[in-house]
Image 1 (cartoon, rainbow, N blue to C red):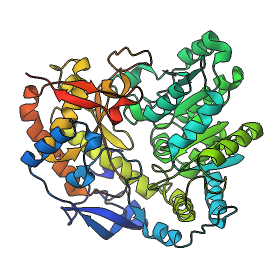
Image 2: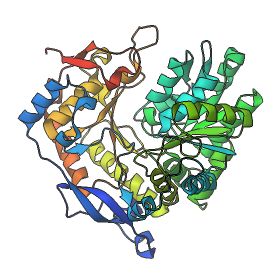
Image 3: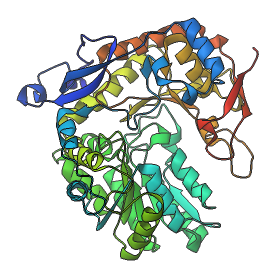
Image 4: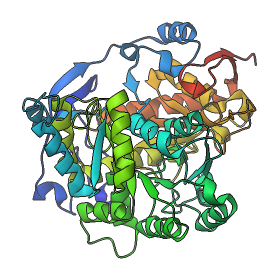
Length: 490
């Protein structure tokens, strides 16, 4: 992450286009430490046009969807950073694998290629495919959740918490204190607070069905967890006789940070680091729409035979037969290929550097960002930047709306709207009010990044005029997806 890896991306020629299909390239020229510019390690093979909108158009569109960013049509968005989940570009090799997909209902060879690719990195005994990660969570917590249960994590993300609470259980976040300080430069701000975890296990006793950890820690700014912390968390889970489950959505990005930042890991391969992480666990949930380069897909992996049998029965009822789990054979083939591409170090170097570049530029403008840069997204500290807007008037939502209105950029509030409402109906400010700008994999170019920075430059001139919002309608669970907002008067 040092200066030798270059201060910026290479300039791309296709400013108004989004990369749709990417062909990977590697070679000693790219890996040379003498190069100052980190280029995208792929060639653009197909493009998708972006419809340009005006600010007046976007104002009307925001009003039509009651200022909820999830309500916007994607073709009304110039740069879509709502999520990195399923929004990346598949490689030429993945598209080729799609053509090999076998759609047999049971026993498809596509499943066995997928299973082998998963076990190559995460050698669990049972691999159960699902249509995406939240389905894996729903299956897991149908077995481990329930009224009176308590489930710790460094930080539960939205669907994880939603599936826990839907079962009647409660989720608790035990990330280290540095993880709540956006400006703190701790290299592993996603780490579990081990002292708090042991106290939690002692306090809650048999009501704890498992211990979880999320890599990287999405809700906390995409911050990584060290291998030492994963091992120590696993040891505590074993000490108290609890299964240890990893939410592994961004496992490769987490492994890159371990390689870059953790003593003794710098000369190891990403593949070996990934295997060491999962070797500590009794199971994992996975959205393959992240670090498997998939547009759809996921899995639940387990070592316990009885638990796996129960999970497969649930799968047959709700998702599909255990050798397809709601996915087509071609999806399984694309994921199998993607799992071989995600551990490529040239790609990961580029991936992390793109986020670092944007964070450095915004930081230079005086815009408070979560530091150090995370793996999959840039996080703006909206509570600090819009300090005139109280947390219960949702400064993150105010910033997300302004970003779209001014520049057509769609981001996602990660704060009090997402995490402030409790199952009993009370509301309190979240630990942080962030806006996440999630960068789709292999999708956007240098000029898109520079445009984003230019929009923030303009936004900085008017930020003090922004006002807060109130919620006029909300569901009982995971309100941020569908709630409606009303803009408050200055």
